Structure formats: structure tokens, C-alpha cells
Image (cartoon, rainbow, N blue to C red; front, side):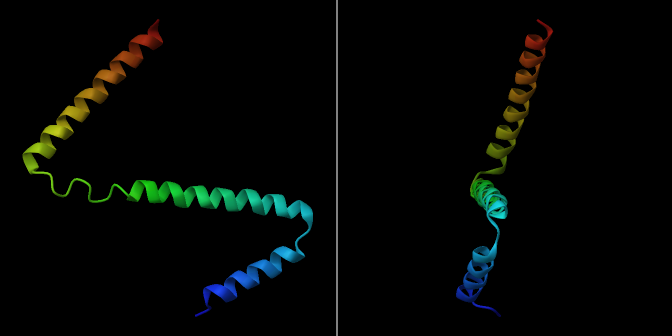
Length: 82
């Protein structure tokens, strides 16, 4: 298995040899990659958030959530019709 340091050094050597126009593409790719990881981390941070919630409370919460979404959709549809 290659160590993290070796991988970083390999990447740096490749970057040093890249033409300037490819550096901007690489920069955009790295920023996109960082955002994806951040988005994934944000989503996964909710994992297990409701594990301590009782079944009845969770069921009520879910039913209320569905009702709110339907109400918001109706409001949105009414605004669209105006």
C-alpha cells in the first residue's frame, strides 16, 4: 500500500509538469471534489439522528411532514396559477 506522503509527492510532481491551461481545469476539478465531499459529509451527519425517537413520535412526525409538504405544494400550485 502506498503511503499518503508518497501519493501527495506523486501528485505534486505531476502538477509541476502540467501546462498552465490544464492547471485551471485541475483547480476547478479539485474544488468540485471538495464540495462533493462536503455535501456528502453534511448529508451523512444526519445518519442516526432519529434512532432514539420512539415509534409513535416518529410516525407522527412523518405524517406531519407529509401533510406540510402537501400543503406547501398546494400553495405553490396556487401561486403558479396566478
